[in-house]
Structures are given as C-alpha cells and as structure tokens.
Image (tube, rainbow, N blue to C red; front, side, top):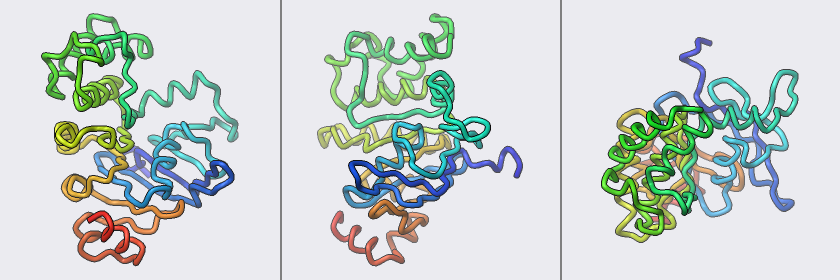
Length: 254
C-alpha cells in the first residue's frame, strides 16, 4: 500500500465498555484523505465514544486506531506509549467539542495562537499572524480581542474551530458541534464546516443535522448498539436504507 493510499483514520475491531456496558462492539472504519464521514444513530449508539477513541480520549479494550498509519495508543511491540508521545500523536487530530472549551481569560486571538506557541514551538509573532488569518477564515476577524464571555455561542464555536485548525491537523473531529447552540447560531457554524469540506479537509462528524449531513458528507455511517449497521453515500442512504433500524431512525428524526 502506498503512502497516499493509507487511510487518514483506520479503526480496526474496536471494542470498548463504559460502566459495564459494551459501547463499541467490533467496529471497523476507514476514512480516506479529504473524506467527510458523518456518524449518525440513536442516543447511546456509540457515536461519541467512537469519535473520542480516535484520539484516545476513550481507551479501547481491544482493537486499534491508526492515524496516518500510526497507532494512536501503541508503539513498537504493542506497548502503550507514554503521555509525551501520546500528546505528539494527538497534535495531528483537531477535536471540536460541544461546549467550546475556550480559555476564558484569553482573547479569541490568544486562544488560537496559544497551542502553536506552547505545543509546536512556533514564534509568537508568526503564530499570531496565522491566528488572525484563521479568525478571518471563520468570519471573526473583528472579534480577535474579545474574550469568550463577550462572544455568542456560535462565535465561540467558530473560535474553537480556528483553534483546532491552528495545529494543522490531519483530521478534524466534531462532536455534535451545534447541539449547545441556539437555533439562529447553528447556521454560522455549519457554514464554516461546509467551507472546510469544500477545501477537502478530512473530517469525522457526529451530528443530528441531517440536511447538513446530506449536503456535505461523502459517506454516512449509521451506528446502533455499538456497531456500524450501515455505511453509504448520503443519496443512497436517505433514498434506500438497507437496514430496518436505519429506516426507523430516519423516520423519527425527520
């Protein structure tokens, strides 16, 4: 397999239990460079656990996650890697959470350049210049000096996206990024994500925004009870779902 053919994300036989309940049950998934994969399914299906396992926020009991062909959790001989090496490998993964997680004492600009300076060792002047460009990219050039408390929820989420992009990740993970937002703020965040998709950013997204999923996803993966039950292009999935469970789920959310 050539380097270009190596999936950006590869999940192999992933199993995970939380609170005595199996939440991932032999999950296999590949995401190629430039692909947008959307995870959908009922509450408790395992979507967020799968997403969190991609950067080792959840520990698998069995199986493996590879990012760019490299295990996120193991080194040579299958041994668990240490914290410093895990941090290095996580740099290649951007994660946007439901609740922003911005530093409240920092401006929007500082939130974006902080990681490249502290983690990547970039000169502050260069990191700040790049951060300004990223804030402009997400439509917030005029909010560079604002603190999170001075921003709307949608604006805070766009800063969080810019902060993740500042680390130049191989893949962006989104865990229901609009679920904590008021309805009128959802569109501004989804628009930024649409633009990232158009630029062929590799993304794995957990969302209940079905119109967005239909428009942006290359593939939609349906999960139920910790398993992937369907994996198809949006047009195929919405027009002719193969699984009765998928049909039931789609009927409830529509």
